[in-house]
Image (tube, rainbow, N blue to C red; front, side, top):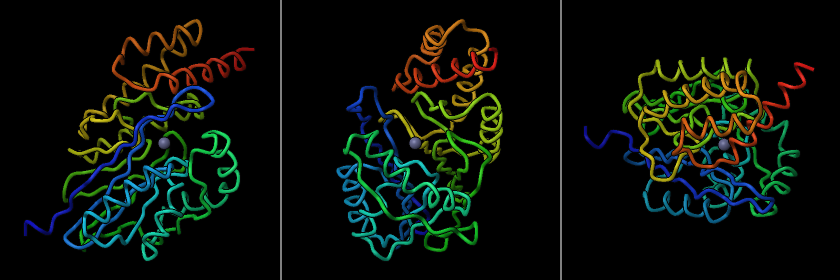
Length: 279
Ligand SMILES: [Zn+2]
Protein backbone atom coordinates (compact mmCIF):
# COMPACT_ATOMS: atom_id res chain seq x y z
CA UNK A 1 0.00 0.00 0.00
CA UNK A 2 2.99 2.32 0.32
CA UNK A 3 2.62 3.48 -3.26
CA UNK A 4 -1.03 4.48 -2.84
CA UNK A 5 -0.34 7.58 -0.82
CA UNK A 6 -0.27 11.18 -1.96
CA UNK A 7 2.86 13.32 -2.00
CA UNK A 8 3.15 17.13 -2.07
CA UNK A 9 5.75 19.10 -4.04
CA UNK A 10 5.61 22.79 -3.08
CA UNK A 11 7.20 25.36 -5.38
CA UNK A 12 7.75 28.86 -3.97
CA UNK A 13 8.75 31.63 -6.37
CA UNK A 14 11.06 34.44 -5.34
CA UNK A 15 9.57 37.63 -3.98
CA UNK A 16 9.11 40.09 -6.86
CA UNK A 17 10.55 43.59 -6.71
CA UNK A 18 7.72 45.60 -8.25
CA UNK A 19 8.71 48.08 -10.96
CA UNK A 20 6.45 50.63 -9.25
CA UNK A 21 8.29 50.17 -5.95
CA UNK A 22 7.61 47.79 -3.12
CA UNK A 23 7.63 44.05 -3.20
CA UNK A 24 5.29 41.20 -4.06
CA UNK A 25 5.31 38.23 -1.68
CA UNK A 26 6.81 34.85 -2.65
CA UNK A 27 3.89 32.71 -3.88
CA UNK A 28 3.42 28.93 -3.74
CA UNK A 29 2.09 26.32 -6.15
CA UNK A 30 1.55 22.78 -4.89
CA UNK A 31 1.68 19.61 -6.94
CA UNK A 32 -0.25 16.72 -5.36
CA UNK A 33 0.87 13.42 -6.85
CA UNK A 34 -0.34 9.84 -6.53
CA UNK A 35 1.00 6.73 -8.27
CA UNK A 36 -0.20 7.85 -11.72
CA UNK A 37 -2.09 11.12 -11.42
CA UNK A 38 -1.33 14.72 -10.36
CA UNK A 39 -3.32 17.80 -9.29
CA UNK A 40 -1.86 21.30 -9.25
CA UNK A 41 -3.04 23.89 -6.73
CA UNK A 42 -2.56 27.52 -7.88
CA UNK A 43 -0.53 28.40 -10.92
CA UNK A 44 2.06 31.20 -10.40
CA UNK A 45 1.76 34.33 -12.55
CA UNK A 46 5.12 34.97 -14.25
CA UNK A 47 6.32 32.96 -17.24
CA UNK A 48 9.56 31.66 -15.72
CA UNK A 49 7.77 30.42 -12.60
CA UNK A 50 4.95 28.78 -14.54
CA UNK A 51 7.61 27.07 -16.68
CA UNK A 52 9.28 25.77 -13.52
CA UNK A 53 5.93 24.33 -12.40
CA UNK A 54 5.51 22.74 -15.86
CA UNK A 55 8.99 21.22 -15.55
CA UNK A 56 8.11 19.73 -12.16
CA UNK A 57 4.87 18.24 -13.50
CA UNK A 58 6.79 16.69 -16.41
CA UNK A 59 9.52 15.42 -14.10
CA UNK A 60 6.93 13.76 -11.87
CA UNK A 61 5.94 11.51 -14.76
CA UNK A 62 2.29 11.74 -13.61
CA UNK A 63 -0.76 12.72 -15.64
CA UNK A 64 -1.96 16.21 -14.70
CA UNK A 65 -5.76 15.82 -14.43
CA UNK A 66 -6.79 18.90 -12.46
CA UNK A 67 -5.69 22.47 -11.72
CA UNK A 68 -7.43 23.77 -8.60
CA UNK A 69 -7.57 27.53 -7.96
CA UNK A 70 -7.98 28.63 -4.32
CA UNK A 71 -9.15 32.21 -4.98
CA UNK A 72 -9.44 34.93 -7.57
CA UNK A 73 -6.19 36.84 -7.25
CA UNK A 74 -4.05 36.92 -10.38
CA UNK A 75 -0.92 35.66 -8.57
CA UNK A 76 -2.79 32.38 -8.00
CA UNK A 77 -4.45 31.79 -11.38
CA UNK A 78 -2.83 33.82 -14.19
CA UNK A 79 -0.63 30.85 -15.15
CA UNK A 80 -3.72 28.88 -16.25
CA UNK A 81 -3.53 29.63 -19.96
CA UNK A 82 0.17 28.77 -20.22
CA UNK A 83 -0.32 25.55 -18.22
CA UNK A 84 -3.30 24.46 -20.32
CA UNK A 85 -1.41 25.02 -23.57
CA UNK A 86 1.09 22.44 -22.30
CA UNK A 87 -1.49 20.15 -20.58
CA UNK A 88 -4.68 20.58 -22.66
CA UNK A 89 -6.46 17.67 -20.92
CA UNK A 90 -6.10 19.09 -17.43
CA UNK A 91 -9.32 20.52 -16.01
CA UNK A 92 -9.11 23.94 -14.34
CA UNK A 93 -11.57 24.08 -11.44
CA UNK A 94 -12.60 26.13 -8.42
CA UNK A 95 -15.47 26.04 -5.96
CA UNK A 96 -18.56 27.69 -7.55
CA UNK A 97 -18.26 31.00 -5.66
CA UNK A 98 -14.59 31.37 -6.62
CA UNK A 99 -15.24 30.38 -10.25
CA UNK A 100 -18.02 32.99 -10.45
CA UNK A 101 -15.84 35.64 -8.83
CA UNK A 102 -13.02 34.99 -11.29
CA UNK A 103 -15.34 35.00 -14.32
CA UNK A 104 -16.91 38.29 -13.20
CA UNK A 105 -13.56 39.99 -12.59
CA UNK A 106 -11.37 38.53 -15.35
CA UNK A 107 -11.27 41.64 -17.54
CA UNK A 108 -10.59 44.04 -14.68
CA UNK A 109 -7.98 41.60 -13.27
CA UNK A 110 -6.22 41.49 -16.66
CA UNK A 111 -5.97 45.27 -16.76
CA UNK A 112 -4.96 45.48 -13.11
CA UNK A 113 -2.26 42.79 -13.44
CA UNK A 114 -0.73 44.47 -16.48
CA UNK A 115 -0.52 47.77 -14.61
CA UNK A 116 0.52 46.37 -11.22
CA UNK A 117 3.24 44.03 -12.51
CA UNK A 118 4.23 46.47 -15.29
CA UNK A 119 3.92 43.86 -18.02
CA UNK A 120 6.04 41.30 -16.17
CA UNK A 121 3.11 39.02 -15.32
CA UNK A 122 1.44 36.72 -17.82
CA UNK A 123 -1.83 37.72 -19.40
CA UNK A 124 -4.58 35.12 -19.02
CA UNK A 125 -7.99 34.61 -20.61
CA UNK A 126 -8.86 31.22 -19.06
CA UNK A 127 -11.19 30.84 -16.08
CA UNK A 128 -11.68 27.78 -13.88
CA UNK A 129 -14.89 25.72 -14.15
CA UNK A 130 -17.24 25.60 -11.15
CA UNK A 131 -17.03 22.30 -9.29
CA UNK A 132 -20.36 20.51 -8.91
CA UNK A 133 -19.07 18.41 -6.00
CA UNK A 134 -16.68 19.04 -3.14
CA UNK A 135 -14.62 15.85 -3.04
CA UNK A 136 -11.98 15.59 -5.74
CA UNK A 137 -9.63 12.63 -6.05
CA UNK A 138 -6.05 11.94 -7.05
CA UNK A 139 -5.68 8.26 -7.96
CA UNK A 140 -8.91 7.62 -6.06
CA UNK A 141 -7.68 9.27 -2.86
CA UNK A 142 -9.94 12.01 -1.48
CA UNK A 143 -9.03 15.70 -1.67
CA UNK A 144 -11.80 17.86 -0.16
CA UNK A 145 -12.47 21.39 -1.38
CA UNK A 146 -13.82 23.48 1.50
CA UNK A 147 -15.20 27.03 1.28
CA UNK A 148 -14.10 29.22 4.17
CA UNK A 149 -15.71 32.51 5.20
CA UNK A 150 -12.71 34.84 4.71
CA UNK A 151 -9.04 34.98 3.78
CA UNK A 152 -7.20 37.94 2.20
CA UNK A 153 -10.32 38.06 0.03
CA UNK A 154 -13.62 36.21 -0.06
CA UNK A 155 -14.68 33.91 -1.61
CA UNK A 156 -11.83 31.52 -1.02
CA UNK A 157 -11.32 27.78 -0.64
CA UNK A 158 -8.85 25.42 0.92
CA UNK A 159 -8.05 21.79 0.11
CA UNK A 160 -7.95 19.15 2.83
CA UNK A 161 -6.26 15.78 2.30
CA UNK A 162 -7.16 13.72 5.36
CA UNK A 163 -5.04 10.69 4.39
CA UNK A 164 -1.83 12.70 4.83
CA UNK A 165 -3.18 15.27 7.36
CA UNK A 166 -2.42 18.08 4.93
CA UNK A 167 -4.18 21.32 4.05
CA UNK A 168 -3.40 23.68 1.16
CA UNK A 169 -4.87 26.94 2.29
CA UNK A 170 -4.31 29.69 -0.28
CA UNK A 171 -4.13 33.08 1.42
CA UNK A 172 -6.02 32.07 4.57
CA UNK A 173 -2.64 31.43 6.20
CA UNK A 174 0.73 33.14 5.66
CA UNK A 175 4.01 31.47 6.55
CA UNK A 176 6.77 33.90 7.53
CA UNK A 177 5.29 36.60 5.28
CA UNK A 178 3.39 39.74 6.30
CA UNK A 179 -0.29 39.02 5.43
CA UNK A 180 -2.18 41.21 2.98
CA UNK A 181 -4.71 42.98 5.22
CA UNK A 182 -5.34 45.95 2.92
CA UNK A 183 -8.67 44.93 1.36
CA UNK A 184 -10.29 43.80 4.60
CA UNK A 185 -11.29 45.59 7.81
CA UNK A 186 -12.11 44.80 11.43
CA UNK A 187 -15.30 42.87 10.57
CA UNK A 188 -13.55 40.72 7.95
CA UNK A 189 -10.62 40.09 10.30
CA UNK A 190 -13.04 38.43 12.76
CA UNK A 191 -14.36 36.26 9.92
CA UNK A 192 -10.80 35.49 8.91
CA UNK A 193 -9.98 34.39 12.47
CA UNK A 194 -13.03 32.09 12.37
CA UNK A 195 -11.67 30.62 9.13
CA UNK A 196 -8.31 30.02 10.80
CA UNK A 197 -10.11 28.22 13.64
CA UNK A 198 -11.85 26.01 11.08
CA UNK A 199 -8.47 25.15 9.53
CA UNK A 200 -6.96 24.40 12.96
CA UNK A 201 -9.93 22.14 13.73
CA UNK A 202 -8.86 19.90 10.84
CA UNK A 203 -5.76 19.21 12.95
CA UNK A 204 -3.32 19.27 10.01
CA UNK A 205 0.33 18.38 10.36
CA UNK A 206 1.22 19.83 6.94
CA UNK A 207 0.01 23.32 6.04
CA UNK A 208 0.90 24.90 2.70
CA UNK A 209 0.33 28.65 2.78
CA UNK A 210 -0.28 30.62 -0.41
CA UNK A 211 2.62 32.91 0.46
CA UNK A 212 5.62 31.78 2.43
CA UNK A 213 9.18 32.75 3.17
CA UNK A 214 11.26 30.61 0.80
CA UNK A 215 12.60 27.62 2.72
CA UNK A 216 10.05 27.86 5.55
CA UNK A 217 8.72 24.45 6.62
CA UNK A 218 5.09 23.63 5.76
CA UNK A 219 4.16 22.86 9.36
CA UNK A 220 1.05 23.80 11.37
CA UNK A 221 3.02 26.46 13.25
CA UNK A 222 1.97 29.05 10.67
CA UNK A 223 -1.73 28.55 11.54
CA UNK A 224 -1.32 29.77 15.12
CA UNK A 225 1.13 32.43 13.98
CA UNK A 226 -1.27 33.89 11.39
CA UNK A 227 -4.05 33.92 14.01
CA UNK A 228 -1.76 35.78 16.40
CA UNK A 229 -0.65 38.20 13.66
CA UNK A 230 -4.21 39.20 12.74
CA UNK A 231 -5.20 39.56 16.41
CA UNK A 232 -2.16 41.74 17.13
CA UNK A 233 -2.66 43.81 13.99
CA UNK A 234 -6.32 44.49 14.86
CA UNK A 235 -5.44 45.40 18.46
CA UNK A 236 -2.61 47.68 17.35
CA UNK A 237 -4.81 49.52 14.84
CA UNK A 238 -6.90 50.51 17.86
CA UNK A 239 -4.02 51.38 20.18
CA UNK A 240 -1.35 52.92 17.92
CA UNK A 241 -1.29 56.63 17.05
CA UNK A 242 -0.47 56.17 13.38
CA UNK A 243 0.48 53.65 10.71
CA UNK A 244 4.21 54.19 11.31
CA UNK A 245 3.85 53.10 14.94
CA UNK A 246 1.72 50.12 13.87
CA UNK A 247 4.37 49.00 11.37
CA UNK A 248 7.15 49.29 13.97
CA UNK A 249 5.05 47.40 16.52
CA UNK A 250 4.26 44.51 14.12
CA UNK A 251 7.90 44.30 12.97
CA UNK A 252 9.06 43.99 16.57
CA UNK A 253 6.60 41.13 17.21
CA UNK A 254 7.24 39.33 13.87
CA UNK A 255 10.84 40.30 12.99
CA UNK A 256 11.37 37.33 10.63
CA UNK A 257 8.38 38.12 8.38
CA UNK A 258 9.37 39.03 4.82
CA UNK A 259 7.77 41.65 2.59
CA UNK A 260 7.42 44.75 4.77
CA UNK A 261 5.66 46.54 1.91
CA UNK A 262 2.58 44.33 2.49
CA UNK A 263 2.62 45.45 6.13
CA UNK A 264 3.05 49.12 5.20
CA UNK A 265 0.14 48.98 2.73
CA UNK A 266 -2.07 47.15 5.25
CA UNK A 267 -1.20 49.65 7.99
CA UNK A 268 -1.74 52.76 5.86
CA UNK A 269 -5.10 51.43 4.66
CA UNK A 270 -6.19 50.55 8.20
CA UNK A 271 -5.42 54.07 9.43
CA UNK A 272 -7.21 55.70 6.50
CA UNK A 273 -10.29 53.69 7.45
CA UNK A 274 -9.86 54.49 11.13
CA UNK A 275 -9.75 58.25 10.41
CA UNK A 276 -12.85 58.04 8.17
CA UNK A 277 -14.74 56.13 10.86
CA UNK A 278 -13.83 58.68 13.52
CA UNK A 279 -14.31 61.74 11.31
ZN1 LIG B 1 -1.93 35.73 -2.96
